[in-house]
Image (cartoon, rainbow over all chains, first blue to last red; front, side, top):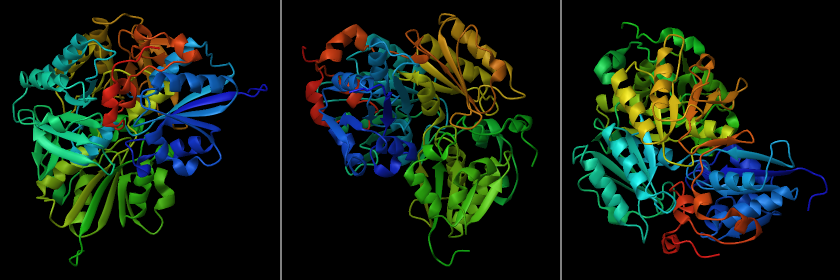
Length: 292
Length: 292
């Protein structure tokens, strides 16, 4: 119970499910907590950090209860961490936790410090296992129609397929929800070639990991479950030497041979400016490729 | 030079730009390398791992040369790491490196072991700094038209806006490329309310970090640079207590008050099944919310 001290509530993304794929910050925050709450499978990933802590391992079906418990304890002045898989912000626990926290009247200057610790999301993890399929514009779409009406999901599938986005399908299939992935396939087949590369990745970075490179027309969806992510290539995505690649466009613009001997072509936007995080603004002066 | 030993080539995502946001695996792979290649700004993030290694710090403008050098050295039997910001697979170095490697005739059973080490991508990092804007279906679109014709980019903006995707804009603006973000804004204004929440995040998790919560109509794009990511909310995204949230839909379906006292509602798809990585297939039996 609170004796005036300020509580804290952190929702932490653990990454795809291997300890090595967690960030240092995720581990720091968990190590500093008094109470760690999460689905028992995820808590096993951080078992080494839990000694001496209050641990609330909840079953799969108690997501909202988990959030409510986390809010109550933080508001009582405790240092609470709620763990989520992948990136807590992408279809993860950050959303419902924040909805709950605001519903309970949380204010930034109030008694509870709140933060989100990002992690490696499933689409990054799955892409890394098959090559480089996400090097161009992409969408993430969940096929779960439990909280989202199917027509809205299908509209997004249609838009993603028509505008040639590489597409990551989260929650593609479960024991009871089996037709949605077939509908998604048929939507994409209206806009993309049957031979469009598709990666089916299940349990990325776990012992039971399964990676299948297939195509839109031939993919066997029966192997998919709640641990699966489906990556559908765009019109230019190809598979070579067992790798799935969406070309960024260099080969249209540059002769790679120049580079294998030497050369210096600039593309700060596409690469250094890349994952947005990086590149200095000085790079803005170098957007025009230099002649080789 | 190779004396028969097998080279290796890893492209490693360093995350948004703070050491704490790197994964343990990223650091392990760099520590095990003989040669580390990257843009000098990123190499500073792993300076503690570089002692005794051959370090090739290249300027911003030499992305393809950096890839070619990495390929040459790995093919000569060396253990090479190429570092990239964020997630190497998302607009990062994994794409051009793989294009180059395949162009050079790489085969999986050949002399070079290749892998991609994923990291926290900019959209996850930026989302974590503003709340939970990415809890629903989203798109990532780069506004760089250096390698992609603008009409294709605008078609994707149109599709993302029309289908109500939360949208992350990478490379929104640079010194020379200033009109694209305005065009993006006007595309979205055709489909979303002027008051739609927008987050402008620059240099996430760096000393120069800047986070601005604004709206589609009022956003001041002048502050954006090559280190910025723009997050545009969907039709349901709201800002409250200084946080940007895209509701997942619980409040439509459940009474959160039930949970703040007690309760157990199931939504394995939306949450536990969440970031795809997790949840056991047993969860498939619990998709129908239990009555409270």
